[in-house]
Length: 126
Image (cartoon, rainbow, N blue to C red; front, side, top):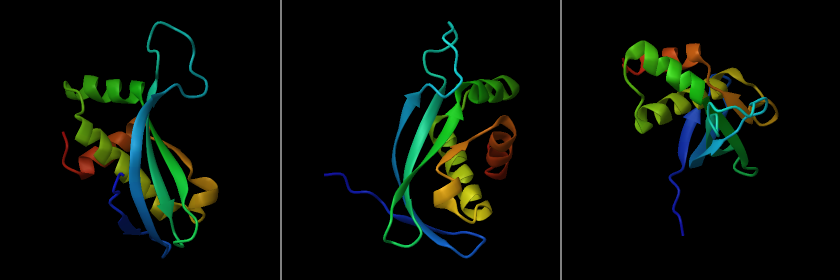
């Protein structure tokens, strides 16, 4: 039996979200081509989220491999697993703040190079 650590976040629209980390996996995202670059082209981080304690739904946040590689090239080092997870959580929090209807519009989120850079800079990761 897995015990999950339920966490709380209050979004800027006043909704109080409860969430927990379910896990991560390698995925091939839509539009990926069968090339010799990578068999899988993103890490998918999955969270279970609720804002009413009645309905829980999954939120997936995708960290594309190319985004991590671009960050590593510009900073001359790779991101650790904990730094990747921190950037993913920052993306989740940004969605909680920006989306009024998280369940309807925030189920699949992407991290792009700019948001990765901004999230890690806010956390003091160089």
